[in-house]
Amino acid sequence: MPEHRIGGQHVQHLRKDAGLTGKELSARWGWHPAKTTRIQKGAAAPSDADIRTWCSACGADDQADDLIATARAVDSMYMEWRRLHRNGMRQVQEDWLALHEQTRHCRVYLSNVPPGFLQTPAFATALMNQITRFQGTPDDVAEAVAARVARSRFLYEGGHRYVVLMEESVLRYRTADPEAMRGQLRHLLAVMPLASVSLGIIPFTAQRTVWPLEAFYLHDDTTAVVETLTAEIKVTQPRELADYAKAFADLAQMAVYGDAARALIRAAIDALE
Image (cartoon, helix red, strand yellow):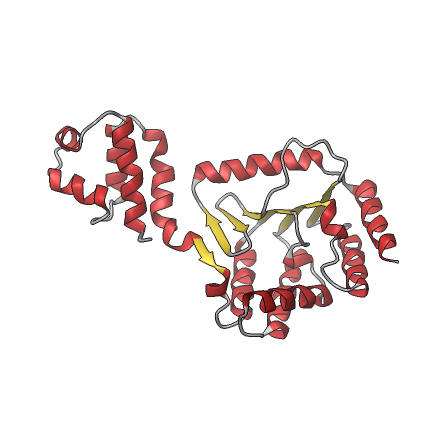
């Protein structure tokens, strides 16, 4: 869907919510009615100034920043995995490497698998083989795994901070064979003492204040990357970013850390024996 079409739909809703006709809005700001019509139909892309003017006319100044972010981001915010992986997975992993290099504070919530930057080569290989088979995309797993594991260097370089929350189920899912799973779980124990890492586990028994969610990564306060079965979604709208930050803060209150988290990881290792 074209970027300007999204903007047109949103501003049209604002006008209707304000009880204004297109002619009334045009007259209020001295616009030619044709301009209003073109914006509403998606035939013309509204500028940032147009969006702010429209929001002001509708008494919705507080929505301007979100609408501007939507208009800028919608064309690239939703990307199907099959499209991203059409030539294999390596390029996507290298793109993630660049994003992590720029990120200073990364907050991550996982309900399915450990984050890529904490995965061992054996675990990443097993997971990526499954994804490649499922999607039917070219097999460049060896190269993609190398690019994914390369992200772990940011754990040891200054200026990067990772706050990771995982559901206890992540420790228990048999995503790889027992040997690879043991190696992955032991790796989590090994990275916990790092100053750059905070690892919390949300126990099965935790009283939920936030239901289990899809995996998401918060990069600083500028972008949330959400992973679904079929697509990667990049969120930049301030209102949505605030919701993800709030969810992360509430999930963090449900997690256990330190020795309690280590006990859950060790119990998952013992269950593999």
